[in-house]
Image (cartoon, rainbow over all chains, first blue to last red; front, side):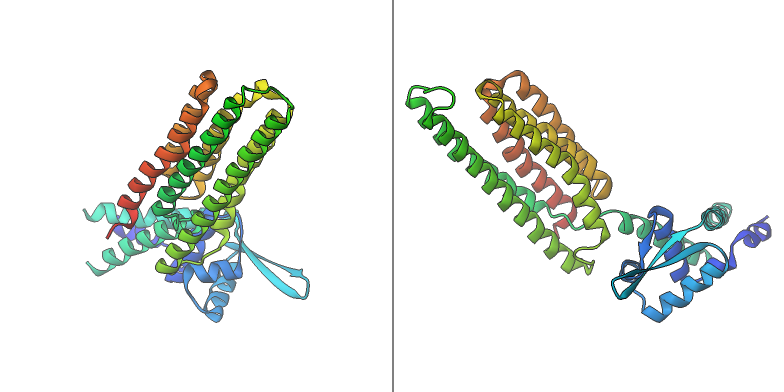
Length: 100
Length: 210
């Protein structure tokens, strides 16, 4: 049984930063780059690489808008992403339950 | 097992991020206590203004004394409101600084917006009560309590959940006050003064005591 559960853990969510990004976007409709950066306490480059990885998986949606001359990037979770994240959480919980 | 520990930490991280990213957690109980005292000071001056008016033999609506009474009461309420807002802001920012949270992030903005909706509606309604003449004045304090309570209940989704119960108590008090309009000031003292002081102390005890 535990082997099966481990397969359900999603590789895309293995890093702490990615877990953080997904958790925040699960409960917020959308969030901009700076808010996300401050919440997760990560550097610009770090956040950018993780968000683009999640976007490639189709788990989050990135939209860029111009506000004056500056670009503002906002992030939101896609339906696929939410589903995948929930499955991942269920797997985590099951693993812990089975161990006890 | 090491991986178990990692999974537990991951789950705790997730829960923490979900809470921190949706709720403004830097509210301070101390500001509640101070706001309560401002309300009591306001009630003291309000009481003086009103008894002054009554000593003049209750001159009646739309006399000079009547408009003065309204003006002075409006000034007192406005001062209490401004000082209360400044105090809440000051202590929240101090708390945010301590915990390293961003001082005015999207959770703070969301909390403000969601409290402002019932508060502005209540403010407009109270203004309408004043405009509608003297027999409506008794409903001002009950309306303030009810709308303030609604603002707290609405705001509680975006900050510490404890605010919800304070809001419910304010609403109950406001409804009670609307049936006993003569004792408006007593309800003001209990709702804005005593409840704030007690609840502020409780919140401080629960979250900030070291």
